[in-house]
Amino acid sequence: MEVAANCSLRVKRPLLDPRFEGYKLSLEPLPCYQLELDAAVAEVKLRDDQYTLEHMHAFGMYNYLHCDSWYQDSVYYIDNLGRIMNLTVMLDTALGKPREVFRLPTDLTAYDNRLCASMHFTSSTLVTLSDGTGRLYVIGTGERGSSTSEKWEIVFNEELGNPFIIIHSISLLKAEEHSVAALLLRIEKDELDMKGSGFYVSLEWVTVSKKTKDNVKYEITKRDILHGKSVPHYAAVEPSGNGLMIISYKSFKFVRMSQEFEENTDEDVSEKNKVEPLYYWQQTEDDLTVTIQLPEDISKEDIQVGFLPDHINIVLKNLQVLEGKLYSCIDHESSTWIIKENNSLEISLIKKNEGLPWPEVVVNDRRGKLLRDPAQCAAIAERLVHLTSEELNPNPDKEKPPCNAQELEECDIFFEESSSLCRFDGSTLKSTHVVNLGSNQYLFSVIVDPKEMPCFCLRHDVDALLWQPHSSKHDDMWEHIATFNALGYVQASKRDKKFFTCAPNYSYAALCECVRHVFIYRQPAPMSTVLYNRKEGRHVGQVAKQQVASLETNDPILGFQATNERLFVLTTKNLFLIKVNTEN
Image (tube, rainbow, N blue to C red):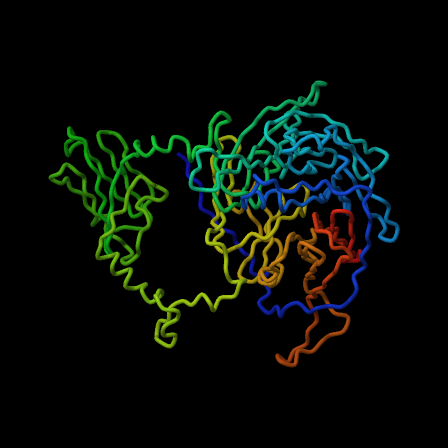
């Protein structure tokens, strides 16, 4: 069985600035334009039965403003009349009203249990759309940048079960067949979950296709479902359609269409049918002892044990029982094996690196069970006892003071569970690459190049690092492309932040609070006049600026998008445009 490779993200040191001094508050006014909407945004508030944190993450914090990354400065939203409205900015001082480009065929007010309508720009001529009732649309739009050739027409329309939101989609052309793949997110009731929230997250990967030569309709050709226990921060299909990447707190796995949620089904039966470990093992600072119970009718001639410096192979009666790469190197010439009186095979492995604790015998083999020596456990506890105390910071001046959580600032504290980044293969439906993100907190995602996968931004120490996935490069799948200095630390102090994003050209990052305030963090740029740092005795040629914009409304912010020149902010009844950069 193939096991997912444990990978890591490689930081490009030249993109880090260890001498970054912080953001200087700039009082330069930001041009802000306000457009009043003809009809309110189609906001769907959470119902009483949508009470979990996952419902809030998926639907309560939904971004109702959609940016068309294929065409610069073009945004869309859906109003409560079921109209898809578009604003394309050519000149800030000559803004027109948002125009209707499509109207949903469904009367949304007739559905009580609907979700928010969602959309994704699949290609320069295609859009995937959900009305929030469980129906998926694929719409041909023509060239959206030109009003003469733009005409939105439904090319696929089908009911797919419970309501969902669309989180990503791609367009594929392979062997004279055109396909659209979309990721649909649902939160489903789990009747068997008595301990947790009572819900699980379902992520459906659906593909609709048609032959390009034949004049036939699009049909569903593939439906795969993943289940997990947390809403993914990031999920996207690779441009080739061969895989899927997910960032989440709790892992996802594929299930069959007819299969119920595997983790909780027949829990009592699985308890009874637990498989005994294949082997038991113990370790000291010098060696490991592996014990395997032998069948009754086996002789010494039926046993073959092979040692290499970093490899082991055990064969019983021509059947390979254990084989693979060892966690660390051994002295293979001194390692031995014997048959014990209780009909068990005992293998002694002499460690090459004395004192190194092994977390496993064979890399990625989970069939063994570690038996801990009580004396070892007591010694470990003794070494760690200085980190704990029943008193609050009883003696801070001693040699090894206990950790005092009160010394931590709020922006130093991370979630107890760390996120992971997983890549799933589209054909085998198994994870092929896993990155444990640890304390690298997920911040946001942004589309830099619409032909590539969306980028994701992670906190790295105090900075925020932007990563571009490259599915074709299996050895270096994630590239560090930009750094927002100190932004990881700064954003943690914004307790009321709702949306977070950056410009596709990395010139600035921006976040907004739930109501009114927008914060803009510009990356270091050359100054017209050189400043002098008296403290360090050097000239300063560039400065990073922070700017704050206050919207003239008390309505909650429902959508937030950034382009290279502008920020778009959507409230219930207004669309605001903030001019951030002037075109160079």
